[in-house]
Image 1: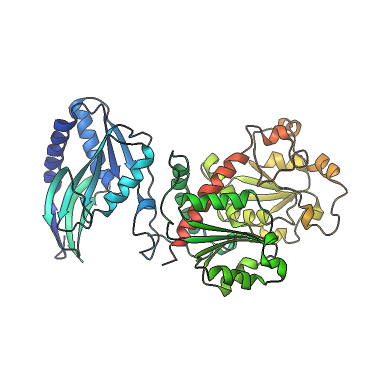
Image 2: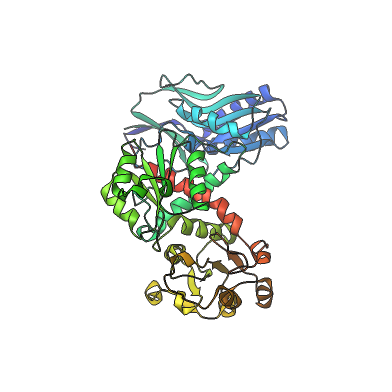
Length: 180
Length: 308
C-alpha cells in the first residue's frame, strides 16, 4: 500500500460480508431450485465463485452458475485507444423463467450492468433479475440502476478508482481505493 | 490491453502472431454468439460497411454480409457487373463515390493483385481484402487455421499439405503465410506446372506424389483448379488431373492414418474431391464455413476500433 491508495476492506472483512450476502440470498431464494447466479466477466467472477461455493456448502446442493461477458453490448466501444477484448464466457445454461442474480465486484456508473442485461437476453426471458455487488459506489450512477444486495457502500469521486485485489491463487485479497 | 498492429486487413503477411492470436481469441466469443438463439450483438450499430465485389463470390460475400449483420452494421452491397464500372469508371472513383455516402469500412474483392493495398493508400476507410487476384485472401487463411486450432487444439507443429492449383490460388499463399507464422509444417502437392517458382523462398516442401503427401500430412487443404485464371493449358485434362491428384475414399483407406480434409470451396466434385470424401467425417468443410462468420466478425470488430 502507498499514499496513493487506501484499503477499504481486508480479506477477513470480505469473508464476513460474503457470509452475510449469502444469508440474504438464502432468505429470498430458499433452496435456489429456480435461481441462477451469473457473474459478470472479468472481475465479478471472483466474487461470484466465492458466493456460489459458500451457498452450495450452506444449502448442501448444486446451484446453477454462469459467467457472462458483455463486451459486445457495451456503449463505450470505440471510445478507447484499444478495442474492448472479450473474456471467455461460461453460460451453458438458460435463464428462461428463472430468478437471476447478477453478481459484480463494483457498481459504479451502472453502464456495465446495463450491457449485462442486454447480454443476458439471448439466454432466455428471466422471471426476474436481481443485482448483487460487493462495493456500491453511490453518487456515481449515470443510469437508473440500483443493487438489491450490497456488501459495502462507499462515497467516492469520479477520479478515484476502486480495485478488487486478487492474489496469485485467484482469491480476493482486499479492496483498495486509488487516487488517479 | 491489446490491439491489432494494422489498420486494414490487406494480407496475412502484414500481420504478426499476436494479431492472429487476438483475432482467434475474439472469434471464440463470436462463435458462441452465433450459436445462441439470438445471434446478433449491437457492437457495430453505428458503422456502415460497403462490400465491393469486383469478382464473383458466393461464400465469402455471404459470410461477410452475415458477419456484418450479426454485428448490427449497416451494409451496402456492390457488384461490378451491374455498376458504373461497366461504363469506364476507375476503381478509385467508384470507391471515393461510395465513401462520400459516409461509409466507414470497405470489404473488397478484386481481380487485380494489390488492389486493396492501392485502395488503402488512397482512402481513409478501413479496408478488408476479401481476395485480390492471385495475391492474398487473408480471412480464408485465418478461418482455415482457426478450424485446425479448433480441431487439434493448436496449429503449431501440424503437418499441412496444400493440394492443387497453388500457382493461381490466393488461398494457398495466405494459408502458407498464416500456417508458417503459427508454427505448422507446410507442403504443397500437385502438377509442377501449377506450383509457384518461389516455393523455397516461401519455406514449403513440394510433393509431386499425392500418396506421399497424404502419408506425411495431418491435414490436407484441397484447392479447386482455377481454369478461369489459366491463360495457357497447364495440364492435359481435368480427367487426367483427377486421376493423379483427385482424392477419393480408396486413397484415404490406403494410407496409414486418419487425416483431415479441408477445402475453401467451391468444390468441383469428382475433380479434386469425390463426394464421399467431401461429405465424410474426415471433412472440415462445413466447419470452415461456420468459422468463417466468427473470424470475419472478429476482424470487423477489432478493426472498427480505429474508427472514432
